[in-house]
Amino acid sequence: MDRSSTRPLPLQIADALRTAIVDGLVVAGDRLPSTRSLAAELSVSRGVVDQAYDQLAAEGWIEGRAGSGTFISHDLRSVTPTTTAVTDARPRAKADSTAPGLALRPGIPWTPPSATAAWRRAWRIAGAEPAPPGYPDPAGPVRLRRSVCSLLGRARGMTVDPDRVVVTTGATHGLTLALAAMRTARPEPRPVLAMEDPGYRTAASAAIAMGWDLYDVPVDAGGMKVDALASTPETTRAVYVTPSHQYPTGGTLDVTRRAALIAHAQTSDTVVVEDDYDSEYRYDVAPLPALAHLDPDRVVYLGTIAKTLGAGVRLGWMVLPAHLVQPVLDHRLATGDFPSTPLCSAMTSLLDDGEWDRTVRAARRRYRDRDAAVRDSLSRFGELRGLGAGMHTTLVLPPGRAEAVARGAAHRGIEVPTVALSTRSHTDVGGLVIGYGRLTDTELRTALTVLVDELQRHRD
Figure 1 (cartoon, rainbow, N blue to C red):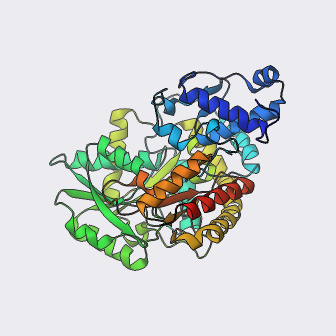
Figure 2 (figure 1 turned 30 degrees about the vertical axis):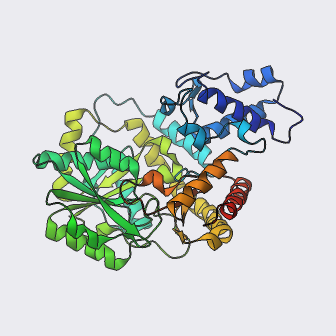
Figure 3 (figure 1 turned 180 degrees about the horizontal axis):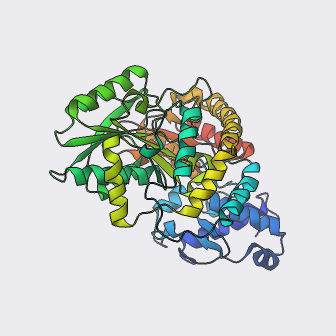
C-alpha cells in the first residue's frame, strides 16, 4: 500500500487482491485471511479491510460463507494468468492510479439496514422448528405458497390459487422446470424457445442446456417485436419475454403488444414464459398488469426475490397453467429437486411480517433518485431506455461507440456492461447497461462523471 497516495486504503487493498486473482496467485476456492488478521498484518483498522472485502464481494470476486470465512468466488474458475477478458472488465490498479473500481452491474439490489435484523429474526423462527423428517412437498410448503399468493395479490393484482404456485430457487430455475415439463409432454421433435434478442443470456444458456433450440426475436423501444413471432419455426413451443422491463434494453411491452402476444400464443398453441424480474420498481406510473392476467392458462409467470432481498437467498416462485402443474411436480420428484424447508420457513416469515414490502418501499425511493441521476447525466448523449422502472437504464449507442466507451471507463476503474454482452444475432443494437442498485450515491456520481467524460471523448 502507498499511504502517500490519494487513493483510499480500502480500494488499494481491493486492487491488490483483484490483481492477485487475475495473475493466478490465488484461485477460485482459496480462502482469504480473516479481516482481523489481514488488518493486523497490514497495520490498518479492521474496518478498512472490511470495506475492501465488501467491494470485492459486490463485484463478484469473493464470497463469504457463514461460519467458514471468505473465499475466492467459485464463479472465477475460468480466470487464469492468461485471461484477458477479465482484465478488460475489471482493470488492474496500475491502469490508472485514481481508478475507483466500481461496477455498474444490473440486477444487484440494495437492501435497507432493517433487512438484516429481519433476516436474523426469520432464521430464528425457522431454527425453532423441528428438522423435517422426510422429503418436502415438491411444490413447496403450502404456507409459503399462500404467502406468495397474498404477495402477488397486493403487488401485482393477481388472484392466484396456491395449487398453481411452485416454489423455485429463482426465475432461471423456474424456466428450466417449465421447459423440462413441456419437453417431457412432447419429446419430439426438438423444441424451439423464442427469446428476445438482446435478452437475458442466462435464460438462453439454460434453455440450450435443457435441450431446446433458440429463435431470436428482435426488440425495440417497446420491448419484444411481437409481430416478428409470425416467422418462428413450426416447432416453437414457448416464448420467453420480460414485458415489464425488457432485459437489457429496458423497454416496456404496451397493452397492444401484450394482447397480440397472448393471441399469438393461443393461435399457435405455445406457452408464454413471463419473467417478471423487477416489476416492483416503477417510479412514474403503476406497473402494467402481468401477462398472466390476460390468459392464466397460457402463461408461466416467474417471480423472484433476487431483486429485493438478493440473489444469494436462492428463492423464487412460478405460477403455472393448470396443465403444467403436475408435469413440473413429476419432474421435481424424478430428479430429487426439492425446495429447502428451513429456507421456505424463513421466507414465509419475511413475507408475512411485511419485510418484503418494507424493503421494496425503501428501495423504490432510493432507485427513483438513481434513475433521475442517470437521466440528468446521460440523456444528452442518446436515447435512454428503461427510465422510470427497474434497477438499470440503458443508453442506446452504436455498438462500436458503446464498446469504446466501456473500454475507456474500464481503464479508469468503472465496469459498465454493454448490450453486446446480451446479444446473440441482432448485433445492430448497441448501448451501455447502467446498473445502479448496489452503489452508494457517491459511487454512482463518480461512475457517471467518468461515463460522461468517456462519452464526450468517444463521439461519433
